[in-house]
Length: 232
Image 1: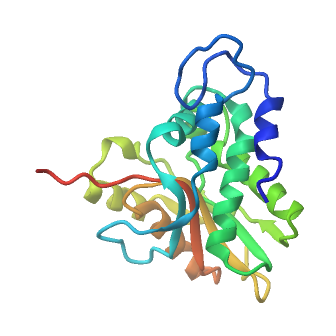
Image 2: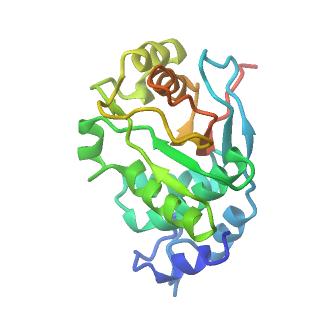
């Protein structure tokens, strides 16, 4: 499914620094340098689970650990306005969805929503852009895919400033079901989408809201999973 992925990078008109390693190199023509492309291409989706896992967290798959070129490319996209990276990152997310969903069949994608403040700070809904490209890539590979924005986000603190308990408390009150969304079509697998999983509190909170609405997620797909550091 990733056949044309890295051709996407070649089509981008981007600055001369690599999004993956931040190095400026003479003659760089792509958003990501060849070495970082190779590193990203070598990643394979696999199951991840925070420890401890919050109640309600569905099985989760990630492309890789939050580090190296994957981390830098995500930061370039989310925090530094490199929005052209949405297409190749969305295609990578499609690979994770395919791993999370299992056999080819109908899939309903539900992205975790941004708060209005976060969307303004990032010049738009960064996960919404990823979701559109993800769905397009899956459909091109033969997957029957629908996207449903079934949840809205209430204002909440930036999770970067919170510890595990704070993330869980903020996430519990952070999401509300949108009206007008009923149960999904029979046989469809509901897959939550996010860019990064840390404690799993956000994905678990969204999953609980969806389950009450009859949209119980069968899995979650993210690009990166942070690795908990244990004190020596």
